[in-house]
Image (tube, rainbow, N blue to C red):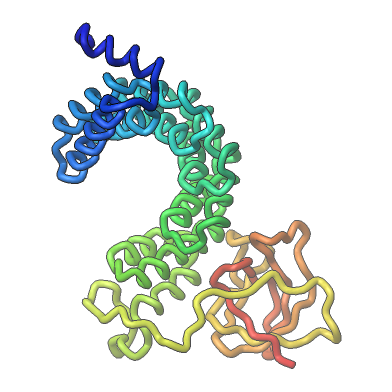
Length: 336
C-alpha cells in the first residue's frame, strides 16, 4: 500500500500534473528503473518504477515498463495488471496490447489473448509479431485454417525472417500440405545460412526431407555446394564448409503464365520428379535433371499464387505433372 505521504503527492500530481519538483522526481525514478533493467537488476527496477508511479500514477510508459519487468521475471499476473493500467491511460498503443496478449497467453487465457493480438493488429496492420502470435494461438487450439492466414501475412511483411517461414512450414506440415511445408523449410535453411546459423539450416533440411526429397536436395546443395561435396555422393554428417555459390540465385519463379505464345520451351534449373497426377502423393513416372527442356501442356485446376501443378512434355519424351511453387524453390528458365 502507498504511504499516506505518497498518496498526498499522487493527488497533488493529478491536480497539477506538470508542476515543480515532484514531476522531476517521478522522471528520476523512471530513469533509475530503466537503468536497472539494462543492468539486470530487476528488483531495483520494480522498486524504482513503483516509486515513480507513486508520484505520477498516470504515466503510461512507467506502467508499461513495470509490466515488462514483471513478465521478464515470469510474474504474469502482475504483468497483466500493469499492462491493463497502461491501457486505461492509453488504449491505442499496439505494443501494450501485444504485451498484454502475450502475458494472457502465458497464463493460458487464450481467448483473451486472441482479442489483444487482434486489437494490436487493428492499431498497426504491419505488426509482424502480433500476426505470428495470433497464428500461434490458433495453431495451439488446432484451428490451422485460422492460423495459416496469420502466418502468411507475417511472411508477406517480413519475408526475410526465418521464424515466419518456420511457423508457416509447421502449419502446412500439420495440415498435410507437404510441398508447401518443404518449400518454407527450404527458406528457413537458406535464410539461416545467410545469417551464419548452420545448425538451424540443418534442422530445416531434416524437417524438409520426409516431405519432399526434391526440395530437400536443393537445400542440401546450399548446405554443401558441389565444390565441397565428397566424391561419391553427399553426406550431411561431415563438417563441410557452408560457403554458397555466388552465382546461384536465391529463390525463383512461378506460376507459369496462363497465356503462352506458341508453347515456349523451359529449361529446368533443378532436379525434379515427374508424377502421374497433380499431387505430391501421386506415382513418380519420370525424372527431369538440371538443364532438361520441357513444354507446358496443361495447368491443373485450382492453381493459385501459392502452389501450382503443370502437365509437361519433356524434350526426351517424358510426360507427366510437375510441381511449381510461387516464390519457392523450383526454378525454371524460359527459352526465347
